[in-house]
View 1 (tube, one colour):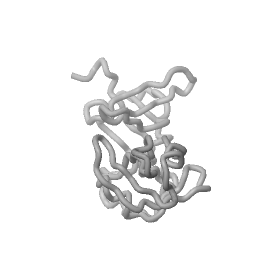
View 2 (spheres, helix red, strand yellow):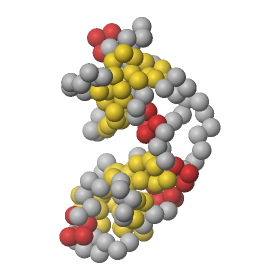
View 3 (cartoon, one colour):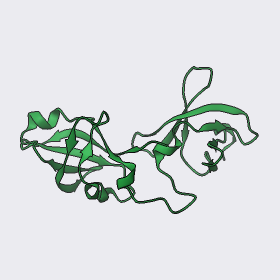
View 4 (cartoon, helix red, strand yellow):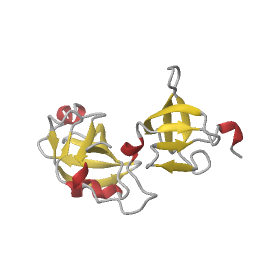
Length: 168
């Protein structure tokens, strides 16, 4: 498990006054402001969201210290993290943070190894599980649905993946 969780990502600058688009990855998208300052991936930069309003497919955020479009443009695609201890505890066995899935073994229902989970991605049409084969090669992308990923066993550190050809 990782001690930091990616909770949001800045998008393109919005307008001329330093606002920036923001995609929230939290269950309640507006909760991203409740965790206090957010950090860059390397932990060297901190960002405080002073205002957040809904926009098409994202939010528009006002960030402390970002006063013009040039400064907002420098934030484009920057992922934002918080320490795991600032997030709500997980109380349900069927609940997890996406970051906890990275590194799990991916196997077929009959136990054949497919590789390791390297990322949970979303390009706008739903979450995808990226699986990197153990021997290398092109990653396998699987829809993160109950049909394609019917089992996540955190104790055994594995997920079960149904081959796309077998999903009805």
